[in-house]
Length: 380
Length: 97
Image 1 (cartoon, helix red, strand yellow):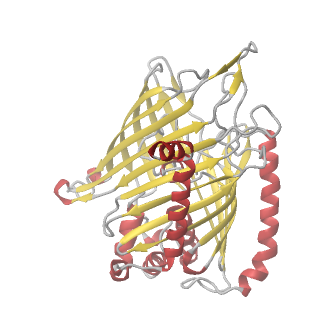
Image 2 (image 1 turned 45 degrees about the horizontal axis):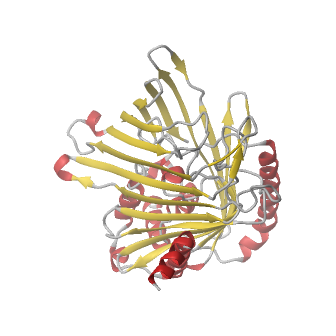
Image 3 (image 1 turned 90 degrees about the vertical axis):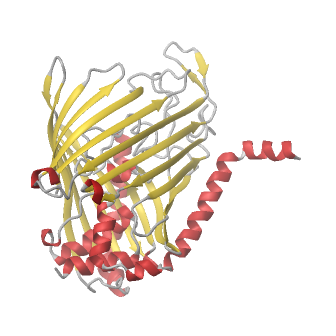
């Protein structure tokens, strides 16, 4: 499950309301309308299918001066499918912190496999990392790329349409969404950053965007995607920031070739996000106005190799991986508590099963103590 | 004239990118009904290995019941945006192992 930052009480309240509306819609529509509709071909008519999924992780961080056991991570994801309806829900459980609800959305499958979704989405497909590769049982490294939490990851409320098809033998995948969108942070220390939500809607404007990706060769896993999300207003309605726009553009490429000559397979992943926020004048802690060109970017590249066809059964389950990631922030921004610069990660992963792994990752960040991270992650 | 076009492109660059993306996606969604010759030929096991492995290790069929596979395949259509035909073939393979 995608890891989110703590939301405000207003955000949680809005999430609760949205959740109640969705649950009522599900309860109301589920028994009657779903049975009245034809079910997608291949699914059993009239049956309600329930699945409890999720993920969990435990671990330790070791630095030169300290060894600390990290807070265990547990995310539960109850899924319900009845006919063409599908409920996706999730609960993040933390030690000593309130249970956070999300994602929480209802899907309806239109003819030809087109999916219509309404509710809260855990991460919009701004590239692929936040939505697909972040979970601990998928990411072979213990850490994610630097900066992706702040520049190009959004949990949001809205409507999404998605589908996939072919042009010749080239696969085309599309997501199109209309959501409340990012909101602008204006407090000293974070003024000019975009909130990654889930956040309370702060004006009439909605964010429109989506992702289109192509897999040019059918039998290959090479996938190239472009995402763009535009919001004409991220400022609070009626405030001095009313009318400040934002745009997030992401380009990603992913490839997982099987290489018989190397007796294994590789994972090659990369993504770059360009974040633009319109011109605005902010106030620093002493009340002095300042402004800056608010353009940021983040990128990462990862390579992993697993000798899955080696003669040794132990080696078959080992993956070696490296990641390089970087964040560029505007020179005039006065952001504190924000990781900057370049991050280097090297990792060794042992897969006990297809969904449970033991990871040793060494993380080097500029201006931060190097850390050896040990993690055990599993998909439930 | 060239200057005018440049100014226009500069001013509306973001919106043009977005418009192109929206048009591309609408076209893509309309194209969902299409299948490819290779997709028709591809078997369930082949698609299972190819589509699952592109993001994570491919789960074996014995790990979940038929009813659970129904839910998981629907969910993977949301997460990975695999096509209608592919989902059906993979599910048929996993449920009949």
